[in-house]
Image 1 (tube, helix red, strand yellow):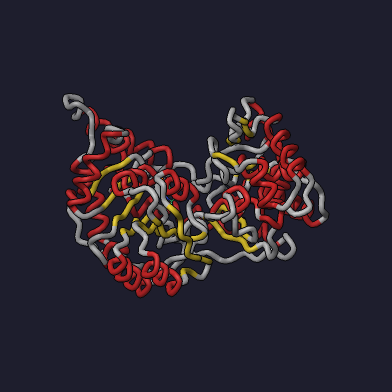
Image 2: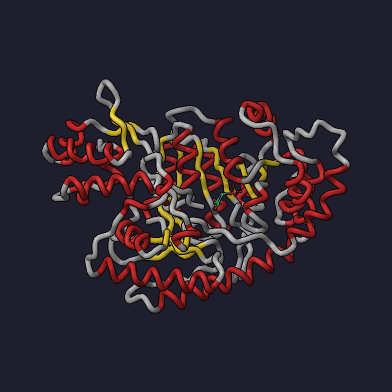
Length: 467
Ligand SMILES: Cc1ncc(COP(=O)(O)O)c(C=O)c1O
């Protein structure tokens, strides 16, 4: 079995590369988060065998990485990933005027300030309580339950826990049901930090493909029945990064199959309200099975700065979640919850604003890409981003070249389980049109650099989240 390093590197990329080039590729994997800090790398001997290169080349590769602070070699011979301690590591977007496409999110909704002011009396009324809110404010849980009811899923406030965002919700669910070494079905591509969370909880990941056209439902259901994974993590609405939406028929089939295979589906609805012009409204997956866990968030419809999300689950799981939660946090900030009560009252205004912004962002990406030779713009009816087919496996090279052009764009493999998806690049449609236009101009320069074979310089990249 290939080591994770070689899996991420791709043996074909290593063939014939010089020690310096190999070190550069490994450094890019580290900066990109595909090799994680603290992760143990294969020994020089094992790596030499795997890549069919000489031991002395591997010694040189690790020495270069060690010199630059990207690995440490411990007594006993193990080599682990580290990060250099220097300020230059963080790409300073202010100073370097880099445009950062690693975060697909909008700035706050215009009503945020007024909602905050309106929320203050509610917060003030809570001053005589302890302030710890493990389950969440009753009126907020009721408002979230009402959203589910409006979308066709009977829900009570007791089926809801308020969390500090959707990723926090995913982590709470995983911490509660995790059994190390179990299998987890994941979409490929998917939201990278969900992959990180699953890995950290000891899961072995089983990918199932998703493209702009949606899911390969035959593959997904076969995988469920064959591998019987303990959990499956799905983003059925405006999937990040493809923008695809699952049909109702697929939802029904997948929910029924997951029941049969004993798989707990975690359905992430963080992106579910990001509709530009889909033209139809699906039923939430939770409508098809009581065992489905749904997580949601205000991050994409209101503001990521709110750190406000939720979990909807059957009552027995809610009880287990509440028992586990205090082991790592004691609830969600009351101010954020009070603001969310106000905002959930204005959903039509929030979604209308989001639609207008995404519409403009999508148009700017389409216009910018039209100028870049052979790139196809897959039209997305909503969501955070467009998932571009580059026509060749050059995503990491393009991403590195883009950094030299002051554009941060994580390569396709960042959204995958095993270093694949080198043909794809995610371009957010969430940025203001002017910034997107400039970003696309820089992408065009990087594209030309890659086509002309200009070398990319990975040294000043950032080790940053991908949202
Ligand atoms: C699918 C998905 N889930 C979760 C998150 C993170 O959500 P939150 O900010 O609520 O933790 C994101 C952010 O992009 C996302 O795309």
